[in-house]
Image (cartoon, rainbow, N blue to C red):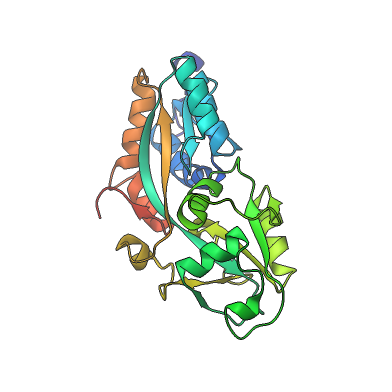
Amino acid sequence: MPNKSIDLADMHFLQLRGSTTVMKLMQQIGLRYMDEFPNIRLPLLGGGTAMGYKSALDGTANIGMASGQISPNIELWAHKNKLEIEEVTIATDGLVAIVNPANPINDLTLEQLHDVFTGATNTWSSLGKYSGPIHVVSHDPKLGTYEPWKRQVAGKEHITLSAKVVSNLNALMQAITSDPFAIGYVGTTFLNKEKVKPLAINGVLPTYVNIKQLRYPIRNNLQLLIKPTATKEEKDFIAYCLDPNKGQAIIKGAGLIPVVGE
């Protein structure tokens, strides 16, 4: 039998906006959700984590998507305008140092990685049996992956000003695959081992088990952002994402660490 048509008056549109990392998950979870609840539509827009925070705060999106912490300038703006949101963690991701497959180095310590990304170390020969300059590739600071990487790798220092800054995944992959001396970073969601080589950190590879058991040192929380005054429809979708048999099962299937049911 054909599905009953849904009256437009009964339709609810929940706009999600922000992190492309979280958006990749929401594409999978959202399709399942709309199948189960045909009166709900979930249009998705990217724009990065900063946009996720801003759009959730100012109400231009129902739900923000974030793969990093709120930036100080947006936090200050929100405080000044007395705007609040709740951050709901739905998954944990690993952040991976990646190099060109031609690079023979397989493992760096976290201290070595710090020196590479702050510019203190700028030749591969300082790190192993490989000669050539180190070409650092970093994400645009507006993207969510930048903030947790900078915080956990560079710490209180800045990522080197000589870094090539990229604003999307394609540019990152192009920079690494075209340059045997390049090093960058990416979330495990977007790791393509056929094109780039992930490095072990402190002897630990960014596998599912190592990230889950906190052995791999560079991790990141993926979040959905809602207002304290969220509607029933918004809260229901958040609950679905946190359901061990629904959203959390999809998250695990995507290779990320669920926060419920593990």
